Image 1 (spheres, rainbow, N blue to C red):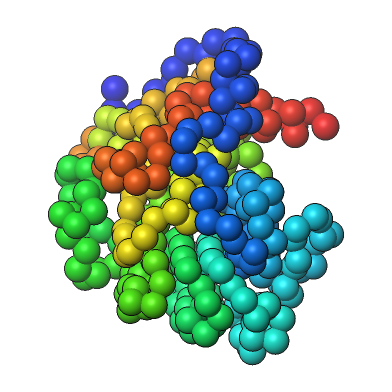
Image 2 (image 1 turned 90 degrees about the vertical axis):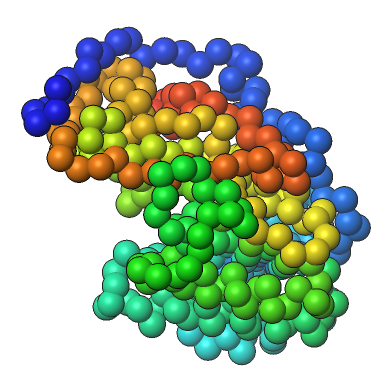
Length: 335
């Protein structure tokens, strides 16, 4: 039990069945198309996990102006705008089209954990660039502005976080969620000019994710035989969302009118222990846990009623998404 490392018996790595593969590769749902006849969509964060899933969906419906520091190879319906969102933002006015139908702002500072050393970088990417994009949107005929926020804006609670009911006071927030809350307030200030949607994402995961994020760190820990630290018996409770479901939620947000703040999370409520056990099963490695019995297990579970009502019901079961990620991880190790 707790107080020592607990090994869970491993099993052979399962092969995902055909219906799961089809679910992961399809768009599905009834709100996964852009209803508006958009010509130009501005996207930030297009090379990140969520952006890389979203970009081909958008490019199939409109011309995408993807803002980033690099210059990836241009593909059909995608123009890359080279601009450092932590630097001089005048390049946005110079390079973006005169007509902007929608803005999807996904970018976040890669230094979000490095406070206070990188506080200025976090502020410029998460707050200042949001304001710059909002102002450009207001001047160039924008109809929808979708902003990527985080479930971290909520005050701590034992129950699932419900939009409009769970407290968002901003007290005691770390720099990253505080900056995202600031961006939400700025976005809401423009609600009289165009429709705005703040999407509060909870633990997005999927293939291609940075090694520093939760799911890759857990997979690496299990694979390397390092223990997963659990607060209490089972650790954090959460409902992580697969990147494909998150991307479809963004697409659906482009059809909403008015001002909204909506949680985007997965269909399954799980604990870190469950995730570790699923990872171990898929990797063929017995996971280890370091339980801290004296600590209370935190809650980061999102209520997804509004997501299901206004956007879509998430499709990817957590254990299927983890199996897909683990298969990808093992394939990379075999190369």
